[in-house]
Image (cartoon, rainbow over all chains, first blue to last red):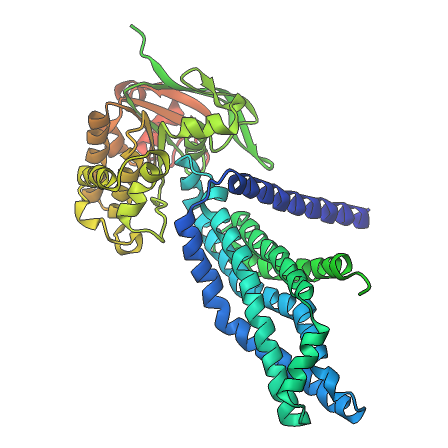
Length: 258
Length: 252
């Protein structure tokens, strides 16, 4: 009986969570489509959530590109296919690692920040004060953050793609003596504009996940400081899990077998 | 002539999970009067304010603001109703990312098309009403507890609401600031010519400002009347509470 109870409880919890998430997404979308947007706040959030994440995104993507290149270049040269390394690094960066790692880094920084900020506002009654003033928390707080992350994550992904490929090129040149031009030429042959665009589509979806999960976790906070901590952890963990699942589905849909 | 009722709780039942908060609770809020609600900690007094503001809906019963039953109101109607009612929170609940002035200006910016100059003038007037005109640019974190509460009052009155709900406005304050806050509530009622509901444990403040007093006990209103009527109530629960005595029928 206990197994059934637990399974039932977990199923209900999952349904409540996904239902709440979709409800928040729907409410936010309603405000966006009716142009009930706080543009000043959205721009401010673009800076706080996007621009301030740039350095950490650049750092992680640089080292990711470098390590892919390091692992593949030496092997490739041994087998006489060093001219393919640029393509391999670019392929991995643009289609998979660029969007996904950027999203994971942003989930850790931005998702946590959104959940902590909104969670603190819940426990100090600021959210209730907004509702009491006739202001909808979704329009007032969620929409600016959602738009900011959805706009900034693709931009960060473009930076991540470029830096990752450049880092890969530098390592390929330094350790496997693959010429920079050859590396870039291989990358350009392997990757087309459509690959970049599809990577950016992924970034948009990941941005929605990060912002909505962070906001939902924050707004569902119960209890005091411990509740805020729990929401923040939940925002990061759940965002990352959903990003991985969404990445698989999007790769299947966008890239299929190609 | 009977007093006109601004808000009415009609036979409210409300539980949170397994905990019964209100049971068969009915209360009339008289227009133009200050009604104080007293009762033990955790009795559900703040929940009554949230019911009147439409932030919480009851399991059964009705909450009327004028003729509108909030239990059957749409989301839009609830938001419309809330614009006529202001809730002043126990810890002010000012948005900590904004200055005091911006906090007070927020309802005006969101609900009116007034110019920046007009908004600033109204905000300064509201801050002046509570003696805080010098704090316009301060962050909430830079204010003391009493100043925070008064800044919360300024935000509550800036839209000139019909009804102001004060949640424990004097809790945790020294006697002088308590007196100042009580005075401010009375003055604001007079200035706005409106209605107020005050939750408080401070009997001296209540005697000073209340037109009506209601006592909540075990989820229901057990005494209601003018200050004198309630003070003279024969109900032993009321008498024990007003005496602040451990001896009596109220289980400690």
